[in-house]
Length: 297
Image (cartoon, rainbow, N blue to C red; front, top):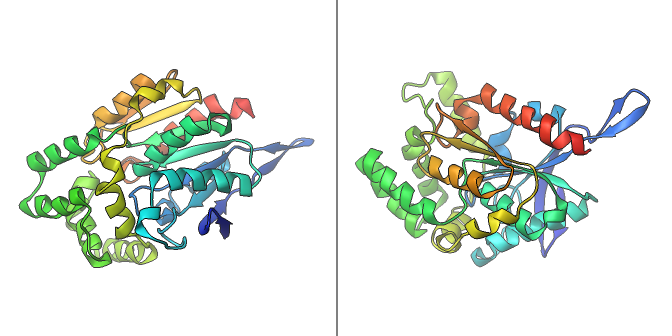
């Protein structure tokens, strides 16, 4: 589905009922906007992994402008400010008063910014392996220097400068960096696993232009640390012990600064927690939703 908002078309997809039979009434479920990483990623990597969450929340998967199935535009329009504004425009388009935000990686940065700008419309925050500031860049560079192969160091130099030149080069980046993204990465994958990986790659539509705009531009100045004390929505912060791109310290920083937030560190995960510790991730999120979000509905 598409929503024509803010001068562009944003793709979104809905999973799960919004109102469910509960004895003599229809009970409203929270609506959760799923915000992807990147910048320049898309929603496809969360399907079907997040499906069990749709039993507890209606899920709205979103592709940021210029990414996935959403319309493209000038690279300079692929900004954090526009991503946040697009979320609120989509919320209004769907007639929603409050939303839960599930923000992974860059999506978590967008979620934090949204919660600060539109606090009255936030029912909860699920922040997964993300960061509150540009400091994550320096930490990631250090981790690559310590743990990376020469090939990893060479390709991440392109990332830090925002200088990707093609989709093929971006795909090569994710292939090279796969062992750092997931603890469970299997270099000796079976043919079935290799085919699944090829299928997932074919389904996705990453934007190297959006990634360049972020890493070569606005992410170098992103910093909401001093404002996080103003967030009062129920917040779950999820970090990963072996995360290379948004180091575990970044999650600790967020949890320290958001009042009343809950912190869970996935000890056997890197950036791809949903892949590395899937069942634990699901139980963690579902428990939080039941305890901190559903009682408000």
